[in-house]
Image (cartoon, rainbow, N blue to C red):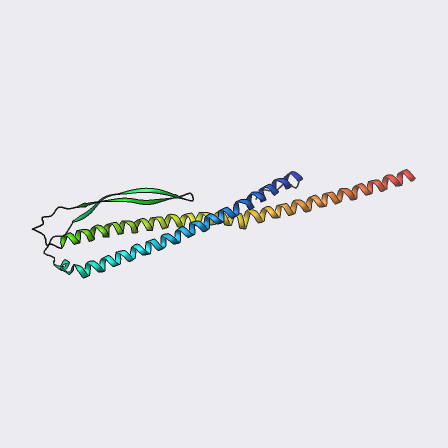
Amino acid sequence: MSRVSLSKSSLAKQNRALQTYERYLPSLDLKRKQIMTERAKEVLAQAETRRKIAALRVRVTENLPMLANREIDLSDLVQVRGARLGEENLLGTRLPVLEGLDLVKRDYGLLSKPHWVDVLVDALSEMLTLQAQLALHDRRLVLLDEAVRKVTQRVNLFDKVLIPRTRENIKRIRVHLSDSERAAIVRSKIAKGKRLREASA
């Protein structure tokens, strides 16, 4: 910590710094609360996506028990060719957004495959989309956690370090200036008394 000059100009500088810190602290705290609210929404969205995945698995298990037949080749019916990602700026935090998923459905003969393969292809497409959304939720949560951590560090820096230190500096400068002023008054009274004694002698 650098030493603070014990002067009136330093007092004014410390007062300005304190006003600045106290002006920015509420906005930083509000930003932290807003990011935490968005994080909570993201956790709910992630849980909803997990629920949809579980429900889809149950639906496929109930409606397509014939998947247990290993003689039918069902590999690579649907594949992900690519994902189109956008970006959202949330309070200075850049978050990925899924704009679309490019799925490739393998051609298969309608007569060479059972009739339920169409239902399976639709279910696989839905599952791949849900899994991509789940991976995106995971990534967004990591980024939001990092943003909350950074903003919390800044809030703590202002609240627990800068503001108390500046207040302490102001107090120290005021005490010093008050003591200096008092000492100057005492010196002037002593000098005045000395002059009066010399003049009367």
